[in-house]
Image (cartoon, rainbow, N blue to C red):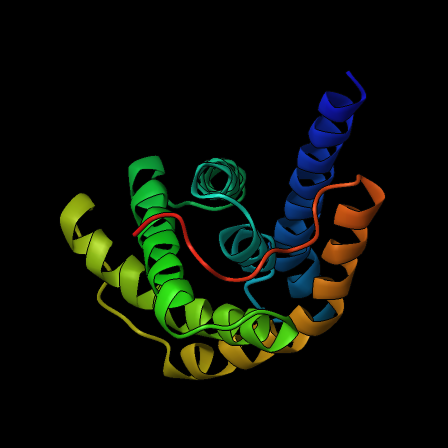
Length: 179
């Protein structure tokens, strides 16, 4: 019974952190820094779960992240699911072939997924939206991955602390059970 409580508290803490990071990105950043590009802070929880959890847990966090983002933005639900699952697949495949364990891999995955996010959003908007996206903000695309990677370092240690506090097994090596 204690293990189930610790597991649920781990899931709940990461869901709360995902909500707080998404709220910070979508509203607080605008009030503090104006219209400068905000880092994709919700991707930090998403990537941590993609790299250091089982595929089923990563998909669960992908769905949770999508539901959080849909409530804080104007993105359609099916497009949000498609974009997040595309990101999940990309990072998961890279986890098998390129990425190694530790904080360096995590920072690289966060920066890379922040680069891939507008590309997947653009592609999936042509599939799901009647007037698809047609504008790219190159300054935003160039700056967001750098800001996201900068926030990844301190939050990685916070996420590891939450795992340790809730007695979730330490982040495993980046070997996959998928292939």
